[in-house]
Length: 347
Image (cartoon, rainbow, N blue to C red; front, side):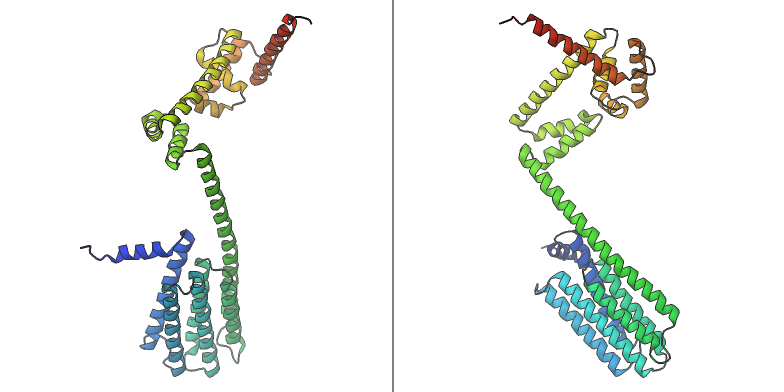
């Protein structure tokens, strides 16, 4: 019999309710915010925080009941997670606004402190919406929060000072703007991820390979010593047909590269094997950094080899090595082409 594990059950619940990372964060925000709201309202009902006024206690009861109702609607999948957070946040802000307006109108003893505490609660609701990437609802909450804030500041003698009004206005507006920007960026990231997944799927289908084969192949290509780790992994994943295709492609590439090296060897017999390989890569337009990766040598070592090549070929400082190699190859091909034309019999 399996033992009950709260952590395992919680992870299972989150996994079942979350389609992606964004949904995962949103669910955690909703659970944390709603739980905190219930705890704070219950603390008020038992007289631990706030003022013990009948109207305020009624508002706390209503807030608890509404929050529990929204949670139950979500758990029974009657509303989506975004609808749950939006509904909960808007109703919670309405309750906070009613509470603040009531306190400012009747002005019980020490009501100013309670008003400021409730205004902090309003900002917390807005902050949860931003953390949960919930669209549009943050603007509704911002409007109610600022309206209540200005009412508390300018009604009668004012329960909140102008400095506090300015501070909370700037914080609330900047937080709401941050919400809009973050939601846009999240959508862009999601679209990029979706496009990349589609592209990757198409590549795998076109090449008839699996994700594991592609990962092993990429690691094999990027590692300077792939044989130590990735060669057995890659070839262990490939079937006989794929191995045959890969080996045939490699043989063609090796023959082509060897032919290029032989061409340079015939023209420049004084160059060593390493120098011939560097000449071939330079002629292809490869930078020093890439040549170092391909040959498995350091950049300084490749620079030294290039210097030795220039000396053996008698090139001065003003002569570009690649331009010399490419031009020399063009001259050779041109001569070969002219020779073929001369040998061609006249009709």
